[in-house]
Length: 242
Ligand SMILES: C[S@@+](CC[C@H](N)C(=O)[O-])C[C@H]1O[C@@H](n2cnc3c(N)ncnc32)[C@H](O)[C@@H]1O
Image (cartoon, rainbow, N blue to C red; front, side, top):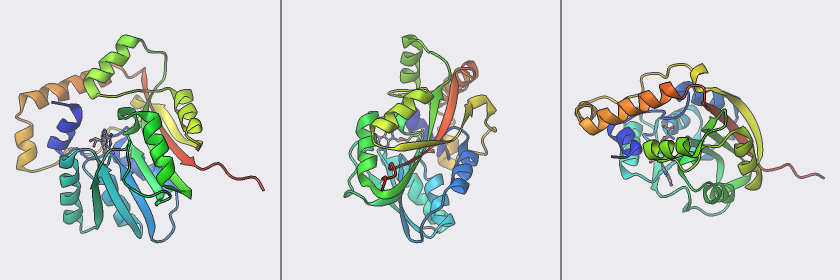
């Protein structure tokens, strides 16, 4: 079983560094035009998509490569009485015309994809005056190839960059980057009640493969507190000089 399948089975909300409190922080740092079109890339179980739809008068599209994540997102939206459009697709091939969105949200998704492909798609479907918020893990000190292999095996990540690496990737994709916040994983609050509820989740917690993954995840985070950090990035198109 893959890490993301475990997140889907457990209905984990806010599966990114800092959880709901970091989402709340970046939402307080941005503004959105009335009727804005918003895309949540790699929406997971839909917690952020639902918060966006509740908080702003906006049209939210939640996209994920896993059908189960989108089912959970729809169930959550129904429960909360908000309207969300779901799309099954890859971040590397976004099925939208150029310049479609005012805000694109990426919370712990770019580490899992072919970065340059996904960033160029995100840039393409963003309106020229739009903004991207990205919350990602980053390394705080040099790591070995063995460390990278371990993270790949455990989580399926393609890359974890350091701060300079993230900035460079955003610049190459044609974005200006402002770091809204960064720090050690350790400095983040213990995240709020993340797991879902109900019979399906209780059933998932009886699955030995899931228990094994939860344990491996907990151990890895414990062992990597000095190595792992996070960044919250605000990306925009470079301002044209007149
Ligand atoms: C760590 S979870 C984060 C989910 C959500 N953004 C959140 O913060 O709770 C990563 C999500 O990215 C999705 N994902 C992985 N690769 C993807 C891809 N190529 N395109 C779209 N979604 C992808 C996974 O299915 C999963 O839902």
